[in-house]
Length: 448
Image 1 (tube, rainbow, N blue to C red):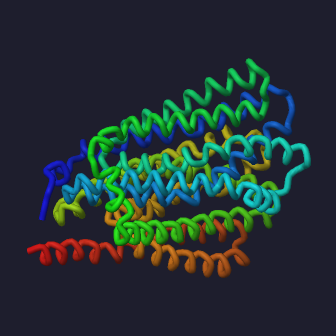
Image 2 (image 1 turned 30 degrees about the vertical axis):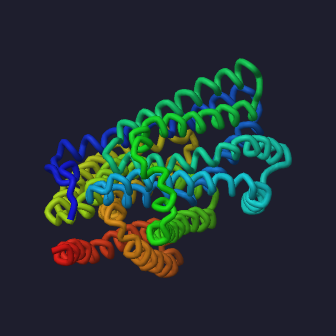
């Protein structure tokens, strides 16, 4: 059994924070870009361009999101290869991730006509907005190979605890995008197309910078060892992990989509209030992502090194920090939730409706922390089948509770069903954790 000292050196609070904090900062830059896009287009003085950029960004984000499994799968597999001291496999995994990402992006380009048609069937818009949206997406889609491949690059860097590099890439992309937005739209008068071109250039430059950050891998001959890269068994394993994560993610998205659709039945004010309140969950997720990503990297390395003690300590320390974060957020939401609602909307009816549900926002981080952190642990361990199966169970729990509670409690029942699904996912994954630890013991025994 080959081990690498970097994989099994001390798992400390400082090490967890070093991984997590750059991700938290990186996530904090994401809403800024959306706000600038909207603000710049808003200077045109018309509603249609604002709607077009918003709708186009949502559609393309949804398409790219389907391939989010590439980030998670690459992190788990790469961290395990790193922990096992398999330098060649670490390099080959980057190549596989890039090939999958570029291929997926090319597929999106080739299928853009039916994809965009389907999107507008689900979310119809006025002829003016649809025309501008198609112009926007028709440009941006050509950066799909870069955007999706960057998922793989990001996962590969996280696996090696290089989250500062991820932060630098994100800041570079967003900063360049903002500057080009201002130049193309306000300076050159290119309108919606200018926003799209700015994002196109930013995403390709982001991939270029990401590859430069990964340049050490290109010094390892295995990155272009094509028999290794296309090894059938390794590809099958990677495909299996990614497919399981995809199914899990689709079910999770189905919960949130159904939540919004069901909320619409209670009227426009309740729908708007739910949308405002979901931002509390997004804030929580952005904060927890850093510690979940830390769990992915450290647990994966411990699995690769067959070090059960490091695995347990990685899980405990990262989860402890996650619990600290959500406890702080629960207190903050309890103390300032109404103020945050007021900042997000000026509509008094929506404000009043949203305040009625602040209690659920206080409970949400505490209900969801186990699910978020265990996701990171199981991704690092590449126990994707458990993630898929427990997500299926949680989805069924959500459906049953919706059917039972919504007719009785209305929108309160809907929020309860969502929080219960969080708890169900955390509990079911928690019940599978002992088997995860035992699998490390079993593999150690085999290697002896």
